[in-house]
Image 1 (cartoon, rainbow, N blue to C red):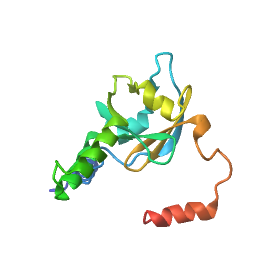
Image 2 (image 1 turned 180 degrees about the vertical axis):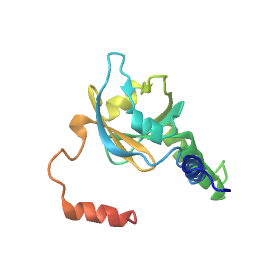
Image 3 (image 1 turned 30 degrees about the vertical axis):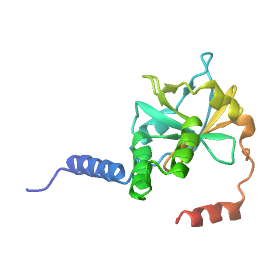
Amino acid sequence: MGRFPTECMDKRNKQDDFAETQKNGISGGCPFGRYDHTIDAKKRLTIPALLRELLGNPDRLYVLRFPGAPCLTLMTDVEMKSRMEKLNASGTSIFDPNRSKALRYIGENSEVVQVDDNGRIRICDRLMRQIGLLKEAVFIGTGLTVEVWALENKPRDDGPVDEQEYANALALVGF
């Protein structure tokens, strides 16, 4: 005897995997994939169930403007805390004018949103206007965060995949 039944081993490994992803700054898994959604009449976005699960079913998310592209980034508490810890470990004083200016600028172009029981979020009109998000949204899981694009502003459509570009992307992130 002395052996775990397979079901117990599977459950223990899943718990260990979840603890490991928490430690590494990822809430519940690695969100990947593309999901197209429509904004409802109250201007709410429903985060796809699988993405919510992979993000750890958060109660709230940080929404930040993505630099240089008309999209938003959704980030969990765990991911944001990890980034803030790195900033604090950098040794820069909280009173450093450059740091204060940078954080103020980021704060002004982001917000924290509540995720309701149905997985919906309401992003402020200002941020939605900045990326041209009116009716159709595209969620793209990027491994650590989720990007939100207006369908019409997303740079690439559903055309053929550029195999070299895809290979370069995989190599860049170490796959």
